[in-house]
Image (tube, rainbow, N blue to C red; front, top):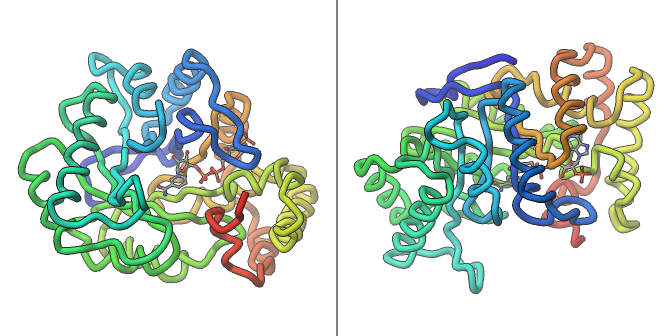
Length: 312
Ligand SMILES: NC(=O)c1ccc[n+]([C@@H]2O[C@H](COP(=O)([O-])OP(=O)(O)OC[C@H]3O[C@@H](n4cnc5c(N)ncnc54)[C@H](OP(=O)(O)O)[C@@H]3O)[C@@H](O)[C@H]2O)c1
């Protein structure tokens, strides 16, 4: 495993991280249910044994935080655990402001501290809604006030699309890390956002390397209205077959060696997939010819690159 500092934070992280929404709620194509608690804890500890030192979770991921707290009690050496707080009203999805926003974040922080069994959160990311402006003066002021209290070590943000990261990068001292979607079908941010993160010292975390499972055997389960996505995935699979590797291995080896990224997340609840991902990562970057072929794969309707638009 390779380790590095996460941007300008003091958090030492592994280049490969584990996403844990799959452990807390039914998630992914076909919405498979999470495994039982003991299997989840075995998976988390196995990931740690294999060198993974960055775990992504959120207050909104069901039992995920609690399972992390049980897998890594505070008496042991612990990985970096990055959690998230939502900023929308749970009832109607509208962006919160003023006192309701402050109360919501306070409750979320207290709940995350309890579930994880810690006095201070390593990294708290604002869990941005899946589109639109989300940064307000209220939000920035609340974040500053938490930093003074010592319960949040670093603040970051997890975003969608290109506009939200651009907004966040206007505040690089406030949002010290940025989590974005990036995969072999969705390469847009590498030209714009990644160089800016590098220049500003913002820690860059990549998710969605399997496009929520579309770049895996689940490709064949995509419904008919996602045919353009299916066709693009088939092109990638043909390329993987030619290299003698699986589609998820191609997808991971494409995303994991972006020089400006600090962590790439794999989201899995399955030990076999985790081992396959570790093996694919160890195999190193893809050959230049394969990277050139990936650049030729294009999707006309870019809205399909956001699983939130799939309607499944
Ligand atoms: N807004 C946000 O902050 C946000 C949004 C989404 C995700 N996330 C984070 O990112 C993590 C990853 O989620 P994602 O949506 O980006 O998914 P992803 O990592 O692109 O895909 C994960 C899905 O791919 C399938 N898969 C098939 N083969 C795999 C393999 N070899 N290794 C891993 N997965 C394989 C798994 O489902 P099956 O095994 O069931 O096929 C798994 O559920 C989440 O756990 C979460 O922590 C954050």
